[in-house]
Image 1: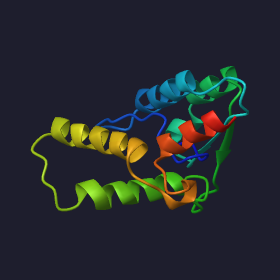
Image 2: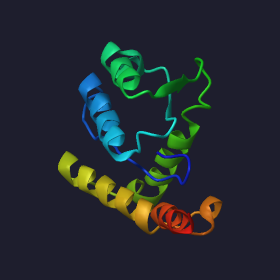
Image 3: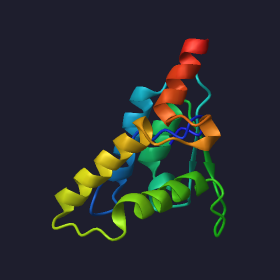
Length: 138
């Protein structure tokens, strides 16, 4: 999630938490984000975010890591909030027959969230609309 406009930049969906799963999302985000920015990534203390391959990707791309202390989720709270909203708006009360069906529903939701769901903290626009409006204003 880009904290500038709350847009989901990249994501991975997996049935098991592997290092490859986490790294893939970071690799996709790196491809999309401008190199000239002073990027910082906020994570919890999961083993994925301490793994040498994760740290190497950060170092190679000049990205700083901010990691909350144990029992303190401040760095990861925007994503935890997003997951709560996702569960409320598309998951609870639904039944999915397969993992693939759930994956498709999550992908559709993220697309809708980024492109259509309005947010007060970005002027009543969707994250993408806000980013585009700001780009035109420059």
